[in-house]
Length: 193
Image (cartoon, rainbow, N blue to C red; front, side):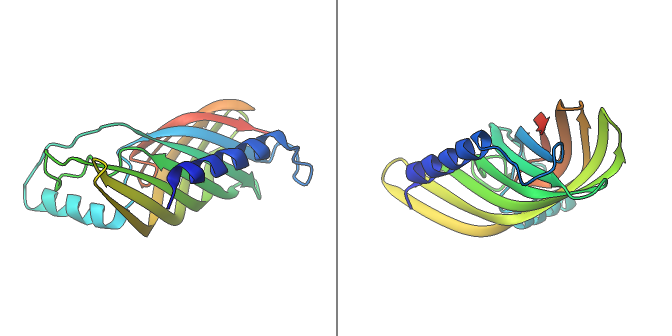
């Protein structure tokens, strides 16, 4: 799999979607979010089990937070309380914060996740929204040991963010707390159109 070509295709598709007018949709029902998340995990289920066992058996390894996972999310507001959409997440340093990897691990890992998401709004006002989001999708993870050995892994993943906050009317900021492919803490800019 050639990731530079895949990145170019995805970037070209996003640019075309942004430049094309969306005449089939109602005005003000679409939302585009660009965010950064910390402590993202593509292997969300197995990583949760590892963290749970380390907490249960009182082995508290140091957790490292190496960098952000970058996401682009589109939402369409189906009703006053429900929005559906999709998300793409690029994690340039995947698996680095999980405690069972040795500290001298020289593998470079990066991943690309694509998922469908649903958002349920608990409280919704003009300039303030409190919501929860859940998503399910798949990922492609590429691991490289210097330039000698390369491995590619595919799998399914999820994101559960029960606490989300968006402030702003047309353009705003958002913050989410959850677990999965976007990270434990996720935030960024949001635009409605």
